[in-house]
Image (cartoon, rainbow, N blue to C red; front, side, top):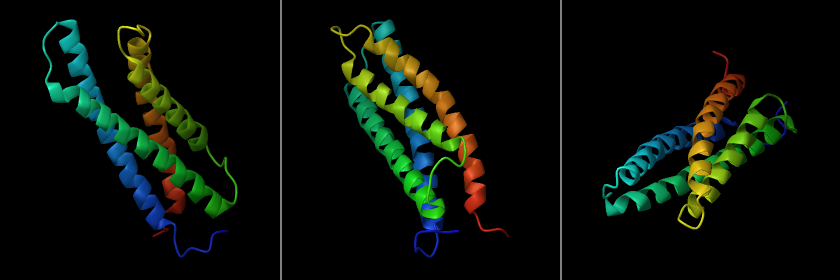
Length: 150
């Protein structure tokens, strides 16, 4: 019961798969660079000048990819089914988007004037790990619905 007049949604799911893969790579890079910055700060060691910029750019890329994934999911589901809410993937995905936005907002506030921002940023990113895991698991079941039966 495909509602949009498109030959196939496979192209949309390919974009989503690549976006998810790159989101996870960005998350891994953010974990490594964030841990590096935290360790340098804790031990009062100097950190490379490029590290913070790289962390910010990578975070921007990940946030953009997650929002792209949300858009693909909404358009694809509405186009295929005509409505939303067919699985736990929707609330899991919306939770991940919310966590990413909290992470971005708190990360940009980190500094001496906002002592609450760093623990919120770090805690949000720890929870985001579980969010990504749930989105991966629920997304895999969604992908199985759209793959052609062989």
